[in-house]
Image (tube, rainbow, N blue to C red; front, side, top):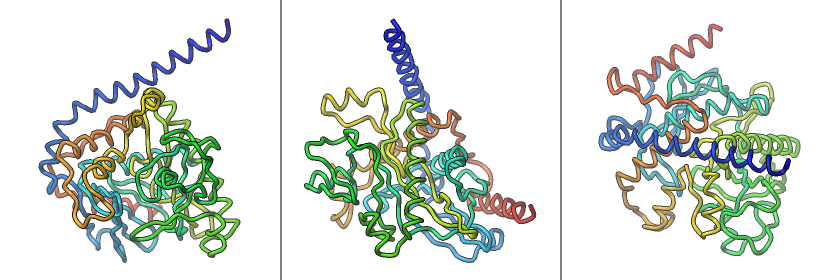
Length: 366
């Protein structure tokens, strides 16, 4: 009797979680008109590159990354998350509202995980901006994986498919299938942090090459595993599977190891819909995903994004759908409505500069 009650409770919970995702699907489809208009007017509505006022922000150095523009001030670091879409070590598109989604999703997770790991976030004065502590970032990306999947050259599935069984210090068993859960549970599979192309590396190589001390590696490994477990549990409570993700960690001025950059965003993570996972796998279909894998698959089907000198432009409807999925993930994870930016008022860089300047002034006076 007790088993039957437990089974009924589990079924009711599964239906409830499935409804969370289904409701978000239907709700965000109503946003497509607003999103498509932004795709058509991407030159004005997408943030391709930020240009914060140097005098207002008071920064001494600006660097442009794949997605983020970084302003290094004397006492803080300002990160502007743009709408640039990067994959396969190249820029592929501009996705409306993507930057705001990434920044706000990350800010939400930063607050929810402070009990696990301290982080750099001081505040988010604008939807696309976070201000963080300055720190020395480890030259490693801490990639956590729970499933045998992926489409890039460093992914666990692409390497396994080629016959690799020794992967980032882990021994992978024979007979595994794409998208299955790893039988050994979650694993940490680090890569180097390079400007052009990250490379796979093992924990032993990281320490022996003096990229990190053994003590720092052990602590970062512990934090990465703990953060990933928490993220998986939180995602499961919203009807999602957090499949894999990457973390960046560094040391602040006091020598404390802290989490930096972003956390559990659809750019740094892979999310699948929990309800449809088993059915899709049993029928040989790809899992239902809510992340940029949607775009990656389109490019691998239409070109060789690593070797071709030029690649086709992403179709308008694909970019709009990707934007919708980003917004949908934000709403599912946070339980909050995404607030679309106003199309009126001063230019976005002017608004950003003013917001950041006011925040930094208050921070310095505190």
